[in-house]
Length: 182
Image (cartoon, rainbow, N blue to C red; front, side, top):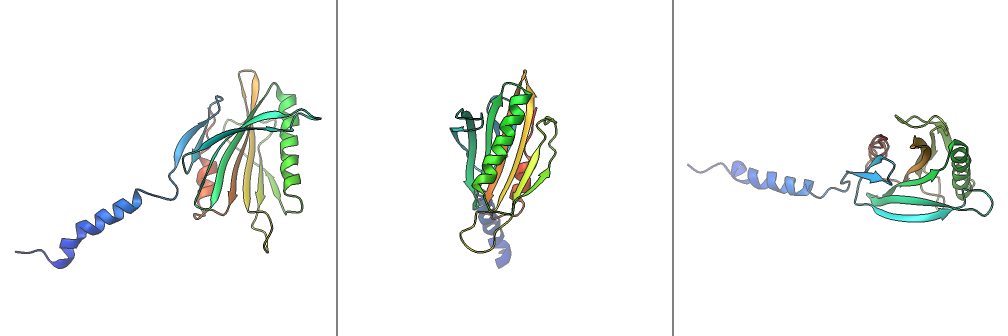
């Protein structure tokens, strides 16, 4: 006795749906950041780069390692630097946030205290939110989290960023909740 028409096509429909699920826009994966133990959850295969930023005061620059990728209309990245002690870490973190503010001059940035399990209390975790600006030509929406962790006598500094408007409204939350310090 032949199967009804709908039952004959059911396996093909299920297979097609399964194949579509194999190529998601956000392909989340755990990625170790530097050698300090942070693990980030990134939505795509990351690229790595090092950039010198003027965090050291005066003309001194600091090597900052960056790991990130673009997926679903946004950039997801984690930047990392290592300070020798808490005083240097506080100064660098203030300089880093000030540099970001100057790049976003005129934008309505909302700065709030943040929490992250096992993050250092000093420098304290801070979150920046830059909502979607009205009109064209303004900066893209951004979500940033600065935090630190004391490790082996030094202080690891981090900036986690989502820049742009991801296709999924949940993507920034998944990214930030996926940050794990040892």
